[in-house]
Each structure stands twice: as C-alpha cells, then as structure tokens.
Image (tube, rainbow, N blue to C red; front, side, top):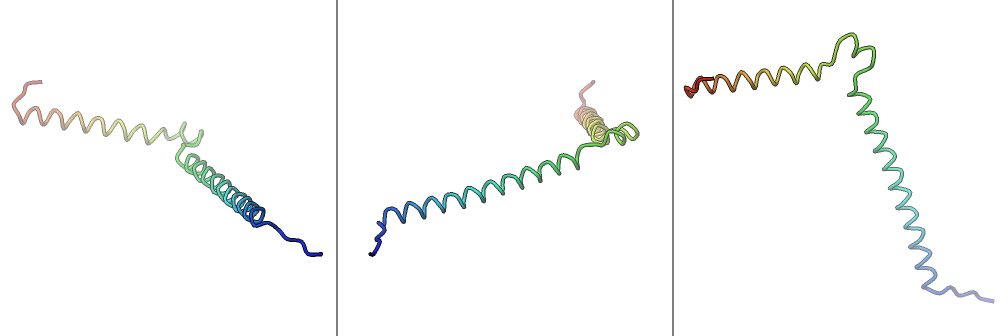
Length: 84
C-alpha cells in the first residue's frame, strides 16, 4: 500500500514550519533588543547613592551649555551694536 501526499498539504506544512521558524527568530531578536535597551538605560541612569553624593553631571552640562548660549547671544548683540 503506497501513501501519496498531495503537494498542497506538503507546501502548506512547509510554509507553516517556515513561519514558525521566522516568528521564533523575531521573538528572540526582540527580547535581545529589549535587554540591550535595558542595559543602556541602566548604564546611563545615575545610581541613587552616586546621584546624591556627586549630583547629576547631565544637569550641570545643560546649565553650562545654556550659560554659553547666553554669552554668545550677548556677544553677538554687542558686535552688532544692539543695546541689551
């Protein structure tokens, strides 16, 4: 007795297996990407103890940049002869 499989069933099964493999790969990639982003957030966020002792260097840098922009604006006004 010889069993014959229809080509349609073989193609559908192969497509389903292929879809499962691709889905599993995407799921693994998504989890790894989330883990990477979690590590980046942990690395960039200040620790509680260090933030209390040293203060936030990011905030200090923003204030310094703001001060420099203000100085540049004043110097440009002086150069163009505008009275502040």
